Length: 444
Image (tube, rainbow, N blue to C red; front, top):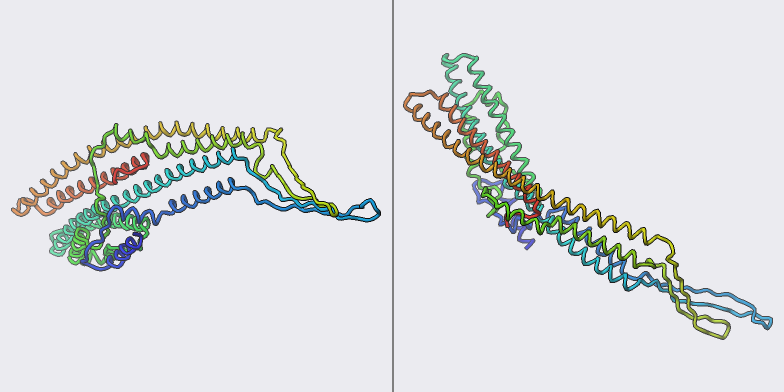
């Protein structure tokens, strides 16, 4: 499955620089696999869990046994000497009632890891989805910016001819130049945002840099102003390439959705919030550690038992050695208190988090409702401005209006579309914040 994803990524990298080829289409499942395979946090989370798992298994295991041997010579009572030796096989056992708690804590840690891993995957997908949808929205905005630049360049082109014919003053011509340069700067700024959005998307998917935008736009402004007709043709080609680009990344089924969310159902998702589940697991872990501290009166390695033989001259007998610590200090009591305090703190944090998540969800839903209402009005505004632009175009064709008036209405129409895209981007970002708060995405 991973090799199939790599093949898709390789195909994307090879195809993107070419022109007029089919677009690379990824399914949502392929999109998720690419995110997971390239997630540093997911890899770090897995490594951290496995290290803690092995540490817990090490704590459960007995320490190494060892052999303790000693010997010496002593008088035998008959004027000679004899050799005396003691050899013991020493053990440092762990208490079974302590081990049972450690094993239970290990299970709780496994549940916490499962919740944390699921949350990391969800957050990574939510972030990538936001990047992809924002990228699509910025492309739309860039297309409108190019259209506005075309409008101003058209005016500038006409103004240039009028200037050459002597029917336009130098001052008025400079005003047209200034208006075009402002439009050019806006489109360049949006293009920069688009390149950044594409870069972020490719980084999170683990793909190589594969720009599809036409970099020939890096022209000196003086050259543009001296050859407006050529630049006008180039801009129209740029607009066409953005609209009908065949080399761009597509994720099938991952589209903008502006449907109203049910507040009650959305808030109900907090009942099984991964954030709360993780905190509950941590609270349970601290409870088990506190119980372990109260039961483990002989910390690992403190209780030592040895069995062996004692040899005195020709005689051999059994020998044993037991080292038992006396738990008469408050060391374990303080250790238990430590874990109890941590457990209470986590429980307190859980209660605060529940309230915080609920407040955030309600606020994000309200913001999304406002954005949705804004977009509804903006769409009506676009219809009106499109109608005004169309009517002005008819008047211009009938020579009842001049081109400047027509372009003014056309720009107003384009500006209204850009404002709608800006609100879409705001909605996408708010939706991502809502999904991060819930710990899951509405896109399955």
